[in-house]
Length: 86
Image (cartoon, rainbow, N blue to C red; front, side, top):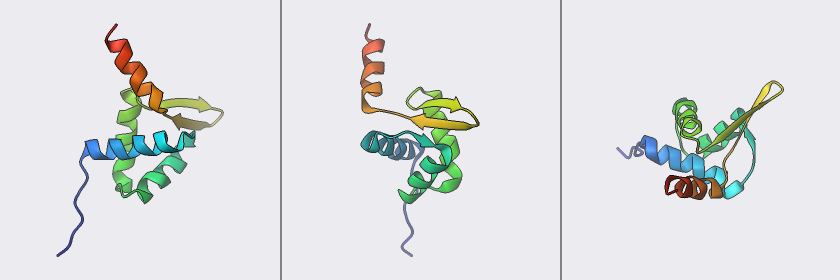
């Protein structure tokens, strides 16, 4: 009975942010969902976890034409930390 360990919500958030920060690319929702699924996150939980990152301002979202684009760069986390200390 060798089942895989379930990821916590925080682990899923970290996987998604790691993808954004290591690639430093802009993605559509379909593209980021495919990459996160390849990284081992359950496909059904990706939209909710991804939306929580957008809600927490860790991932940026912009609607251009009929598509939504998402991105997050490593400096954003540092910038948020600096703003909290001002």
